[in-house]
Amino acid sequence: MKKAYGKFFFTGIILAALLTGCGRGNGTDQGESRPAQETTEQPAEEDEAAPGIAFACKDMDGNAVSEAVFSGSKLTMVNVWATYCNPCLSEMPGLGELAKAYEPEAFQIIGIISDVPEDADEAAIENAAALIEATGADYTHLLLNESVYRALLTEVTAVPTTFFVDENGVVVDTVIGAMEKSAWEEKINALLDES
Image (cartoon, rainbow, N blue to C red):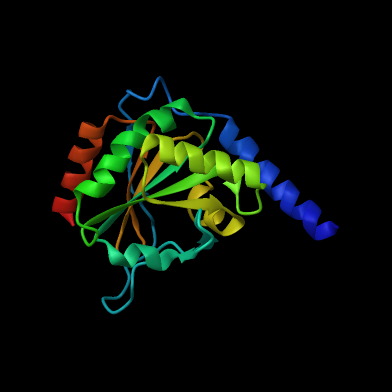
């Protein structure tokens, strides 16, 4: 009982934090871009890997996913969305088109459904699946758990929020809010050119 209460409490805290904001506008606003967070730590030795994201979770099909998912592409766009968020849903058709436009070795998109935890009931998962299908967002979508929350969502205050992650699992840019497909394409190409 205590474990179940803890899981319920954790899920409630996450949902309360994310329910406080849902992007800005109607899905056509330019998102607010933030550079990767600067640290005051000493640079790593050349033979040490840069610190990256670490997590373990399940996708919509029940497959196990970890931070290893980043190593397959030069750049990964991680789009945090919610089933109740109109700006999120408005930008997903364009994201679906972008996911198909690039070679997987160069670029991929991963969605995180911020209001559907791994232990959600079947109706919540079916609703998310229907939204994914209706928007054409045919790319991997992760279900929320504590590991994903701690790795990526502790500072997320609104959805959609999008992170760009390199092949080493290091966040290189963050955008808060929705953007049009053309603006996303411009940002993706610029980040690919920089890496």
